[in-house]
Length: 415
Image 1 (cartoon, rainbow, N blue to C red):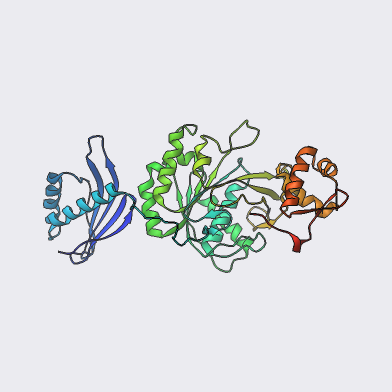
Image 2: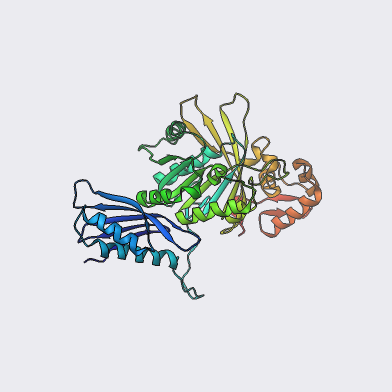
């Protein structure tokens, strides 16, 4: 009898007995408070025109249940089902109980820089949250990011360069396939792509944690490199202010073992907007970006400012400004770079350093009080920031106390 080949992990396993031409998929593994472990199994035979043999929930810790199922399967296809089911149960239980393997880490190991699917937004294998108010363009920007990853094509104007192509799954709790298809079509026109862009789309209803086995099978089947989750609140289910809701969401996301871009909404009635709900949404994400936007009533464009609020794997990145230009209701949507400080109602929220770097090349040398007056900021704050920027080589201090922008070839970008 052959030894099975095993693929998958994290609660979904695929077994193949080559000689016997038997495939069994194990999923939805549950252990109750008495220690009884059950799983859903799907049994198939590659030798049959219709491969399906049986589907059931099996008690993996019961010899009686195995024997009863072996007798049923023997009437359908003649192989040594007792041995096959014994191997299936033992190997599944061993993998579930062992969990992830122990690794030996030493200071002498070779190390690599943090890898990105698309820098600076998507650290590979990690969750990134993109949050902003409704209608801010965050879902549109997330879809644009997904399209660049799916094609492996750069957006030269925005300086967004994916590190190769990866398959993208779009998990949608908010809108419909027709709306995402429409946006996909219009953004593709705006990118002037010669070849079609394909995303795998799923309209979702159940919270992520309740649907994780199905999604894990999809990640494995499609060999997905990126998940776009739109949006966080319905994907979590339950009370978002409760830490356990957040931790349950991230446990499920960790089981999927895939780079994720999660679209979220901000908390209300706070001076500085944060992600709605428990602080653990910020704490457990590896990178967090805030979206702020401006749009004229009846206008055909929106200005989007992206502010990096949290980084576990890198320094905080400078704000990015994007303008989306809409050509009618079905025409191309084009994305252009825009200086974030020039976006109305957004630029004033940019960090003082960003605003100084935008001001000085246009104004010429200024004294700290003049900079403060132009920015509407306190003189003390501006003086401290200018001194830090001088020490890091971002601006030059003249003999008369004024500060000036450095020439491009002189600019030093700090870590």
